Length: 88
Image 1: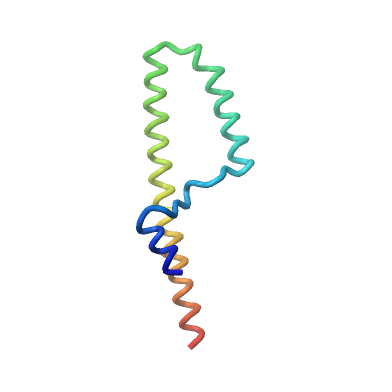
Image 2: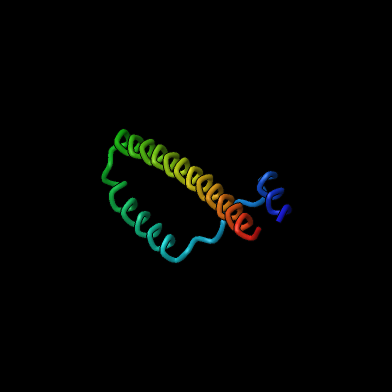
């Protein structure tokens, strides 16, 4: 168990980097399809604004993912503590 904690510490265990599930891949294809439809209709200025907005949305998603990871990790740790307390 200590090995996985060390892997997390050194940045080698990355829970957010793995294979995409089928649902995510399907949604990604749909997202790209919509983008390919409307992007040619946009002026350069509008396109640039939407790109900036997408970047901010991506950063927001990353912040939410990080917070969810921290909360999940802490919940898991509390569950383990509770299990060991009940064994006594």
